[in-house]
Image (cartoon, rainbow, N blue to C red):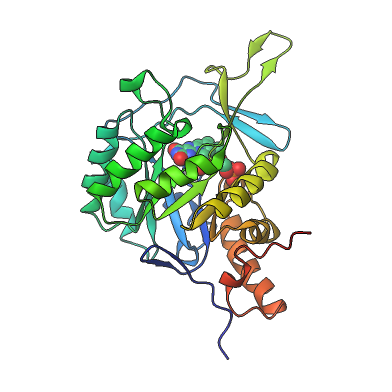
Length: 305
Ligand SMILES: Cc1cc2nc3c(=O)[nH]c(=O)nc-3n(C[C@H](O)[C@H](O)[C@H](O)COP(=O)(O)O)c2cc1C
């Protein structure tokens, strides 16, 4: 007898299961091999890459908060060419799908990154649109539907890799942003990125982060993420990838019932580096226990009153 089917599809890409790691919380994958088998995961999403290297923000860049954390890493990375010549070699060692997360300050930068990555053997591209468009006064691509549409369309024209647009939750209506990405040609949307927050030290009266504000992640944001995934999945036909505070198999099931086709695990990796592998096993156990033949049966299975 064969076990439950864990496979899911995003565009023309078939993932062995719906569990991915979230960008920025899992390095380039290899750092986590003492704790799990990368080949057990649906995909590994690596730290955001820009055209040129970035040194990120000054410290302190991380603060713990109740049920979560604030980070203001500032998208530190080695830059595209060094990434391709060094980090990408790691990927070939594993029978795992690697997704490269990209970021840029202009539509042109995003397009150039996509065109260059199109010639590599990565599984998919995830576009982080939470960055400010320096050419248009610094407004983040991710909060303006027209800009989100333009950047999606520009990237789409330069790559035939599966294209995931990663949405920011710092908007009034997430469904408008999800639709803009779908209209621009995305194969999927992933949500949510971090929620903007801050923390103050009452003793010194200073902000706890040198950058003053940072991105909130972890279990504290799960209800917000779940609500946005539910709303977005009702608005678009492309798959929705749920992210935000996931740390257990039950969390994954909640996201899939809300409409997610797959999920990404972020901050939980920093607490338990083996958690993503354990969740894959937990999901398989759940499907067996409930005699569910395919994980796809869970997608959008929410029973509303
Ligand atoms: C330390 C840290 C670094 C991150 N770096 C990136 C990044 O480079 N690109 C990106 O799109 N998201 C980045 N994120 C956001 C996560 O991928 C994820 O969307 C967010 O943390 C919410 O999920 P979680 O609650 O499971 O952590 C980062 C998050 C953290 C905590």
